[in-house]
Amino acid sequence: MAGLDAKELPKILEEDVEALKAALGTGNLIEAAVKAKETLDMADEITLDIAVTGEAGSGKSSFVNAIRGLGDRDEGAAATGVIETTKEPTAYPHPTYPNVRVWDLPGIDTPTFKPDTYLKQVKFSRYDFFIIISSPRFKYHDISLTQEIQRQGKKFYFVRSKVDQDLANEKHLYDEGLRP
Image (cartoon, rainbow, N blue to C red):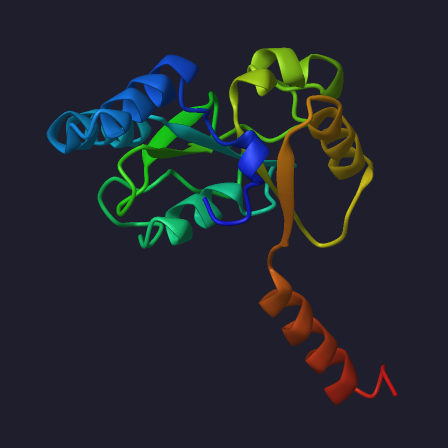
């Protein structure tokens, strides 16, 4: 959760702060420690839902697998393929942070997920944070997703995928004398 602004983090209830102050004020350190532990335990129950979105075929499912330390063929991995594979938003647990769920969203602008209905179909507002996967270049849909995320007051990152393929293609063109 590094990079989140402190004002975005869940707040400790005022009554809990007052109870902690009261216990400290009376010198009851045991009660203060118990109250502090209860407050910290509550923070452990907060979930973070990270949505991985973008156009179909951009590498969203492969990214979900990579961030979880899995290969595309490993058990428990998100399904990948050359055709539209992700048919509904699917949550995958993060291997290190049990309260973090990485959501593999279907691609925008497919026969099933048209741009004008996509946000509603994937319940876009339910996610806390977004990663927009783009390949081979940023397009109109990347911009529209960004605008909606900003409208909701949430944070996002762009990830450019398949750079290795672009580099191999450029090398081939250079080797063939088609690039200076």
